[in-house]
Image (tube, rainbow, N blue to C red; front, side):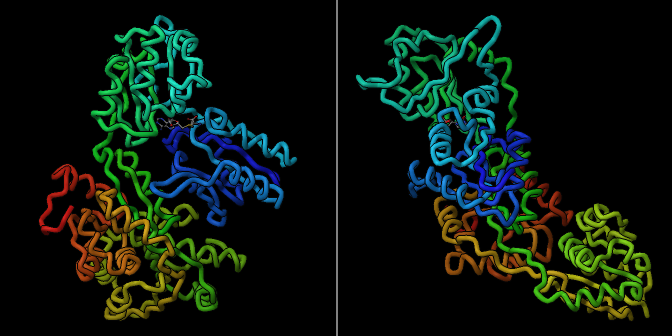
Length: 516
Ligand code: SAH
């Protein structure tokens, strides 16, 4: 993507897998990403960490940036020579006001590209098992805005014509006017018996579908409490859903799960949760930073040949070591003398990705088990290098020294409290918008509590799952209740624990007497 260019990228209907390859490619090169509510938040992970992320959509209570202001922002960023991605829900040119944005860019002489997206008009019905055309049932489809009051005399939508213009009608932005829309279609001669469906949050874990006759669809949708975003589908094709309803909500269907890992590590956990139907809500409680003063780490690297073992305690540690190796124009060969201990499978995978095989991965990722493993191996008199986070548990080095090993600890990276907006999180907790909180390390619990401050008590309203006993203990010490602890202390194990907790009790059983 050239500098000073704006790409209007279709973000797809909500499922993060429904972004196009071109969209992902442009996101990866973006300096600025301008997005709104309908673009799946996971998509932002395709953009580099350094990219500026600008939210311009409507979020509960807060108002959207006006279209004029968005147009001006795109033009200005383009003229400043930035690579701008304007992520737009669905397809940018299907009721997305993408046309207006493109016109503004054209008028200002800013080069732009349009990347079509998977539109909700077709994808939401598809995920509900409704093909919008079908050889026997529908040979045409119309996509219509339901935003306008159909009874308004000056309506831009010609319902008299549209009611019969196509076999299948897909109406966007219409849930709030379902009764008027359905009435109008019946008034224009569509049969009240005609099948209809409303698909809410189609393609996402929150997807809900209601089907009824045209006469009854508004009442049925209202009874189910359906709200935007949703599409209304009217036509014989809706009947196919009886046979084609393929979309399975996973074991965590619809549960909103807080992910507190650092942003660059959150995606794996979020993906696993989403695959099971949960809605991951990322609130990174920590942030990983490279060293400001890498001299001690560089020195350790220069002396790698003198160590018998290098113990890697996290994938971040591996990344940090390699970042310095790279800066020193070295590579994996620097490790050739030392044996490598990776504290868990994720750390071993990080080594493997760099061409190194861990000599030992402890079966249990707890300090005591690791020390016991080294005791078995016999490390008395050996030199061990322990590159680790600045806030790591000191007990590992202590235990190893007690075995008679000479242990050099060196800080490989910093973990700092992330500067996320705790007010937003508190709001979510307060409104009951979260079901489960996950903690993948003690520092995430600590920082989350620090960020919430006096509002920490709000955590009583959710169930919590910890990756292991150390994290659980840290939580309890801070007064955070723990509902489940993973058996296997990995991200996969954490997700398994969430699943088990939900299977045992799908709803939170309130034991503390606090309000839920
Ligand atoms: N450009 C978008 C549409 C933007 S208008 C597209 O091509 O999909 C916004 C409307 O799109 C919403 O009011 C709703 O009717 C529909 N919509 C967007 N995402 C949706 C989803 N995941 N499920 C159902 N409807 C959706």
